[in-house]
Image (cartoon, rainbow, N blue to C red; front, side, top):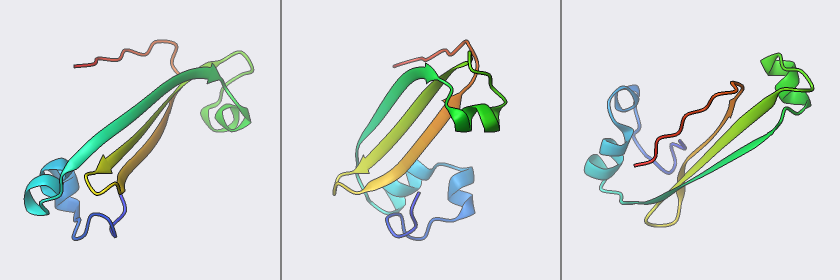
Length: 90
Protein backbone atom coordinates (compact mmCIF):
# COMPACT_ATOMS: atom_id res chain seq x y z
CA UNK A 1 0.00 0.00 0.00
CA UNK A 2 1.86 3.11 -1.21
CA UNK A 3 2.23 5.90 1.34
CA UNK A 4 1.98 8.55 -1.38
CA UNK A 5 -1.53 7.29 -2.19
CA UNK A 6 -2.62 6.65 1.43
CA UNK A 7 -0.96 9.46 3.45
CA UNK A 8 -0.40 9.16 7.18
CA UNK A 9 -0.71 5.37 7.23
CA UNK A 10 0.62 4.02 10.53
CA UNK A 11 1.11 0.59 12.03
CA UNK A 12 -2.00 1.07 14.20
CA UNK A 13 -4.13 1.38 11.04
CA UNK A 14 -2.74 -1.94 9.81
CA UNK A 15 -3.53 -3.58 13.14
CA UNK A 16 -7.10 -2.26 13.06
CA UNK A 17 -8.83 -1.59 9.72
CA UNK A 18 -7.01 -0.04 6.80
CA UNK A 19 -10.28 0.26 4.91
CA UNK A 20 -11.89 2.15 7.82
CA UNK A 21 -8.91 4.54 7.87
CA UNK A 22 -9.15 5.09 4.10
CA UNK A 23 -12.93 5.65 4.10
CA UNK A 24 -13.59 7.44 7.37
CA UNK A 25 -10.40 9.25 8.34
CA UNK A 26 -9.07 10.19 4.90
CA UNK A 27 -12.49 10.45 3.27
CA UNK A 28 -11.41 8.49 0.20
CA UNK A 29 -13.93 6.36 -1.61
CA UNK A 30 -12.99 2.84 -2.68
CA UNK A 31 -14.25 2.24 -6.20
CA UNK A 32 -13.51 -1.41 -6.88
CA UNK A 33 -11.37 -4.44 -6.27
CA UNK A 34 -10.46 -6.91 -8.99
CA UNK A 35 -9.37 -10.43 -8.13
CA UNK A 36 -7.89 -12.83 -10.65
CA UNK A 37 -7.49 -16.51 -9.79
CA UNK A 38 -5.64 -18.95 -12.01
CA UNK A 39 -4.15 -22.39 -11.75
CA UNK A 40 -0.83 -23.26 -13.32
CA UNK A 41 2.16 -25.55 -13.13
CA UNK A 42 4.91 -24.33 -10.83
CA UNK A 43 7.55 -22.24 -12.62
CA UNK A 44 11.26 -22.23 -11.76
CA UNK A 45 10.89 -19.59 -9.00
CA UNK A 46 7.92 -21.41 -7.48
CA UNK A 47 9.91 -24.65 -7.46
CA UNK A 48 12.97 -22.99 -5.93
CA UNK A 49 11.31 -20.93 -3.18
CA UNK A 50 8.33 -23.16 -2.39
CA UNK A 51 10.19 -26.46 -2.62
CA UNK A 52 8.01 -27.81 -5.43
CA UNK A 53 8.57 -30.39 -8.14
CA UNK A 54 7.87 -30.42 -11.88
CA UNK A 55 4.52 -32.07 -11.15
CA UNK A 56 3.23 -29.59 -8.55
CA UNK A 57 0.27 -27.35 -9.26
CA UNK A 58 -0.12 -23.83 -7.87
CA UNK A 59 -2.98 -21.37 -7.55
CA UNK A 60 -2.13 -17.72 -8.15
CA UNK A 61 -4.42 -15.08 -6.64
CA UNK A 62 -3.86 -11.48 -7.71
CA UNK A 63 -5.79 -8.52 -6.27
CA UNK A 64 -5.82 -4.90 -7.43
CA UNK A 65 -7.94 -2.31 -5.58
CA UNK A 66 -8.76 1.16 -6.87
CA UNK A 67 -9.86 4.41 -5.28
CA UNK A 68 -12.64 6.49 -6.82
CA UNK A 69 -9.98 8.77 -8.38
CA UNK A 70 -8.59 5.77 -10.31
CA UNK A 71 -5.40 5.36 -8.26
CA UNK A 72 -4.33 1.87 -7.27
CA UNK A 73 -4.00 1.69 -3.50
CA UNK A 74 -3.58 -2.05 -3.01
CA UNK A 75 -1.87 -4.78 -4.98
CA UNK A 76 -1.19 -8.32 -3.87
CA UNK A 77 -0.16 -11.56 -5.52
CA UNK A 78 -0.32 -14.82 -3.60
CA UNK A 79 0.87 -18.24 -4.66
CA UNK A 80 -0.89 -21.17 -2.99
CA UNK A 81 0.92 -24.47 -3.18
CA UNK A 82 -1.72 -26.73 -1.66
CA UNK A 83 -3.89 -29.01 -3.74
CA UNK A 84 -6.98 -27.81 -1.90
CA UNK A 85 -8.10 -24.20 -2.14
CA UNK A 86 -11.47 -23.07 -0.84
CA UNK A 87 -12.88 -19.76 -2.04
CA UNK A 88 -15.93 -18.16 -0.45
CA UNK A 89 -17.62 -15.43 -2.46
CA UNK A 90 -20.32 -13.30 -0.86
